[in-house]
Image (cartoon, rainbow, N blue to C red; front, top):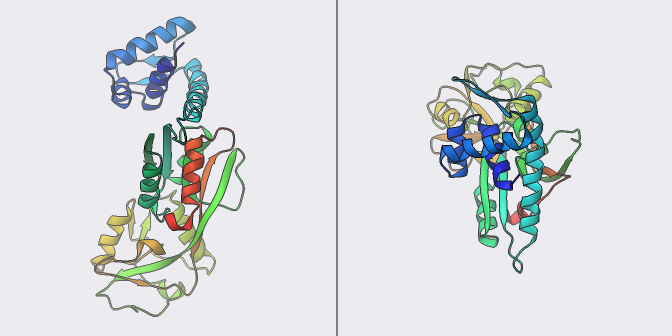
Length: 289
């Protein structure tokens, strides 16, 4: 059993499509198929249940998937630890959700300039997926809103706290500068975010605390689409403060009833690579955000 075989297997297990797995590994599909067939022969078990319409993991495939990820992660940490001088190598998989990371481009740019031999991959996903993928070692580090409860198996470092502001059309009739209460917004039409977004959960919690249920006229899963709706004067929207500056046609209004969140970096407590540690140090430095 070779590391390359495990890499091909993990790609196929996560994509559940041999063509996509081949593109991910930058090889032809026949290389993926042949490698997995050899692995199944060596292990004397079928790892995939293949039909004309779908590919799924067998029970043995599910078991190997978890073990193979751990093996590849350990190999990558060992590889990156054998640095040339002070140079870090290996891969760094970063997770982020929409709206939750102030200073993301600057932090990634600083990481690339300091450690050019580290290969960086960025994945945007809902917060529940990011927590799971860090625990499963599919992501090295993720920047997420933090809850109150600790999650076993994770290292957590708070990065900053941020208040939210109201966005309304710059040409609208509502107050453009003075702070507004949530109660005053009860009759407004709102842009809201899809179920499962931590951003929407924080907003909903703020309204629940005063016993108000705002309209949910426009549900989106992209912040920029929501801003376009606000700019057109169709609705208002609540967002983290760092998203508000320099939006043409949109005015930011302070909230008298504060809504906000804590944002932090999470990484595996069991398997944290030198590259992940270096990146966490960068994003924990105020000047990088």
